[in-house]
Length: 95
Image (cartoon, rainbow, N blue to C red):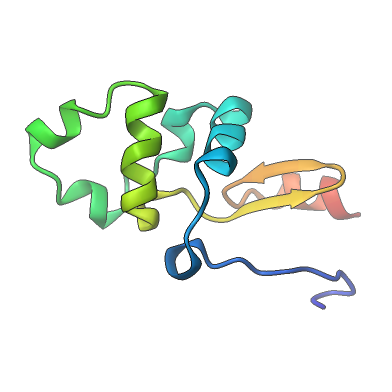
């Protein structure tokens, strides 16, 4: 519990993630938002490797292998999903 809110933390960098979950997130936010292009894992790719990630299917394949390239945090609640940390979004979701 944190700030009076029960939660379950899923460390997808350590525990992995399913293709179905990534598909759901990409459907909601767009694959280009779920894929964290500011992450060092992504930045270390050669330009040719980056060029292969052109659509949702190829992005999901990449994120399944390089889970650290998934934007964090992603919060799932009964009220919806949040991608990244935007204080106002969290206030609106939980207050």
